[in-house]
Image (cartoon, rainbow, N blue to C red; front, top):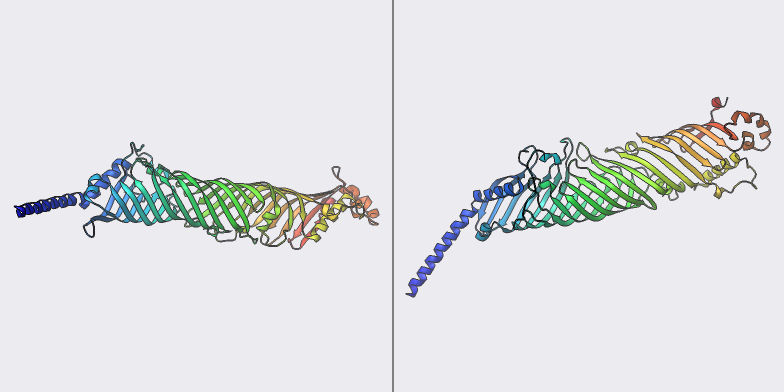
Amino acid sequence: MKQRWIKWALAAGAGTLVVLLGLFFWYARPSKITQMVRDGAAERLDLDVTIDHVEVHLLPRPAVSGRGVALRLPGRPDLPPFVAIDEFRVNIGLLSLVRKRVDTVYAKGLHIAVPPSEARDGLPGGRSGEPSEVVINHFVTEDGSLQFVPSDPAKQPLTFAIHDLDVWNVGVGLAMPFEATLTNPVPEGLVRAEGEVGPFVKGEVPHSAVSGEYTFEDANLATINGIGGTLQSTGTFSGTIQRIAVTGQAHVPDFSLDLGGRPLPLEADFDAVVTGTNGTTVLERVDAVLHETPMVVTGAVINQPGPGNRALEFDVTIDDGRIEDILALVIDSEQPVMTGRLAVDAHMKLPPGDTPVRDRLEVDGRFGLNESRFTDSGVQSKMVTLSRRSSGRNGDDEAPPAESVLTDLSGRVRLADGVARLTTIRFQVPGALVALDGTYGLQSGALDFEGELRMQASVSEAIGGFKSFFLRPFNPLFRKEGAGAVVPIRIEGTRNEPKFGVRWGEVF
């Protein structure tokens, strides 16, 4: 009797095992799994799904693997898949198949291509509705990419290399925690991020929410040709997958420009937006401090046609800066050429290219410089002499000391093709005002300016001494509009060997 019971138990167990195996193979057959994924993506996300190959494994434990997974926007075969997976593997059991829920999915080669916003025009869409149960407890991937597809097919997509990505509680209608490590393309550097993505929006997955915190490490600014330094940044981000707003702080201890100067520390608080429509990063607000010069910057890092082409375009406002900080980016010397308070309001462009910054940089703006002083004693001495003669004070006892003579400078500059065109330039020292218009070559140092020198003193008073007696008859020639003397002048030569002259044709 006991043996018969054992036989019946073994038979029942075998039968149950056969039934369970049958059910397992029924639910785990490749066509069934493919159909489950396809129906779920279509119903919940309004995405078309294809899977190239699916296999079922029994040993060492039941599992499903596959390759060539693609989730696409319906009706847009011209766009890359919104999500593509090269290979995947997931351990499963009969219960997980029946419940349509698995513990961990391991994927290799996850590629996300965020389409341009107009890609959904004309297609139905809406909210995802009530939250679903968790479909995947833990999604793990490595060696992937996040790509923003631009509206203009001639432009290169903005692509982030994903080193690893973990997502928990994956399901429709849920905010899913994630951690990721990826490489930012421009400037190139490592980004570590954690936050939440979702809930996914049915028919408009690229418009689904994303938020979190990030750390940007050792970003190489030299990947934007013409700029140098290593950037560190931390901050937060929020918005949608297609349009991410970033608020953060940045520190560059060695910021430099390819203009022959030396590195300076740069600190900044900023608000920026990364948009998938054109692959451009918009700098909505940057409050920066270059060494000791505060400035406000707005603009964009613009994605242009061709691989790796990024252009900078921005507006810069400096209300109370230091001219020595700006000159340090241009002139590499221990002692600044001059010191003083600086104001700037300018629009700047730096197109992409391999040529030096001075040949590509475009500037259009106004500047003002006051309370400035040349640090070279010889140059400062000439400013003192100009002030003394223009004031008619040639005696040492009545002339101001060298350290008390300050200069003011203002004007408008337009820089293009390495040539600065300066207009309405006003250079002032006590007793004299110089007005100039002309050009200056950034590389050659060539000077070509014309203008006038307006003095308080007459010509004879400016010369002084015995010679002044013979120049008195000529005073009326130079006297103009209430000034003691107005002398038409020209400045030519180079910055190292300038040549000053009088335009005598204008005098007579």
